Image (cartoon, rainbow over the protein chains, first blue to last red):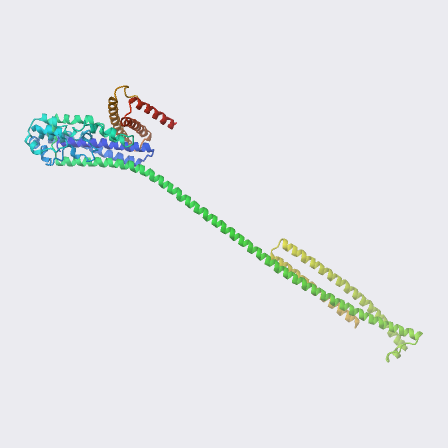
Length: 475
Length: 99
């Protein structure tokens, strides 16, 4: 690579380094303004700057060695061959203005301010304009294409015309349109300072081409070259990408914060929805459990009522049965007592008749005795028998009276027991109502009824025993 | 502020404003480059000192504010005195807002 190319490359890299540093500074500024620091983004931007820095360092280190190696090489013939007009198309596209966008944003001085396109690009044009008239035309009409054939004739002309022709690309710099650009784009928005910054160095930029044109050696070094153009385009492209990346980084930073805010809002809303759903679910479950509890309570009450009714019914049945049995027993006892009384009365009547017969024998005529008894009455044996019978009758009377008294006492005790049993049943019912569940209450009542049945059975046995004893006594 | 001389015609003032705006642009670029260089150095050291970065970025932000003010003066055709008054008002409002 020749010295000029190296210089150009070095300048381009320096320019790229500055731009990237500025872009990184813009990035840091954006983070500062938004108070949102992203170390990764900073590291990436720093890496890009460091990459260019390394490349520049490499180039700086390589340049002296290459220059030393390339020193003896004949430069003059090649310089003569590769003058500016060889690479220039006939259309004149590659004048200073042609790389500028059609939007008019980048006026000539904006790019010249960087110092990139000073020696190489302008001096060849100056060589071609050395013929004389072309340079004046170029100054007067900066936008018109250069005519290479005319300039080719003046390839060997002296440098002074080149010096006058050098500012051609930047000749628009002092025009009112260029200088009035900052106020037109100045309204105080955040994007304005960069624009103003690009237009700022316009004044010094106009001087640079003149300095480059004053050195013929640099003019020869600045001969257009495909590789150099490619490198220049490459560097410009990288520069553009770096700027785009910086802008994208700024935009992404803003978008990130917006996106983060949106995400946070979304999360909050979703969590609120989940909370609402959870609350609704909890409320539904509470309502369902309350409903179930109410149903269970109602069913329990219903069962308790049914059990109470059943137990009441059973108790009523048992009481009715017990009452009927007690009445039957009383009736039977009364009947037995009546029969005993009738027997006693019959015996008493018999005894009275016997006594009347004995009295008749002594005073009044006795009633006619039974056919078998007349002989016995008269005899002493008959008297003894009567006496024995009377004694026996009296004893039987006494025994029956005692038995009757015992039966009455027994009946009374049974009635007392029945009354006590009823009281116990009543107490059991009250206790069951107060404490025990329905089924245990029913069991208690059943037990009381069984006990009553046992009592009744025992009473019947007692009555039967008393009846049997009376019959034995009677016989 | 207080950077401009008093008096003079409107054209002179505008030229002075433009010149000052250019100076501010240069200063801004220089500070941004310095900020980028600091960031690269911090990246090489493996940690970013946000306090230093914030200080430097604050300088750039103040330059931006001043440049905005000057651009506004150019755009609205304000005189230097008006611009200075505007700057004082804005300084007062910003300090009040900061308080």
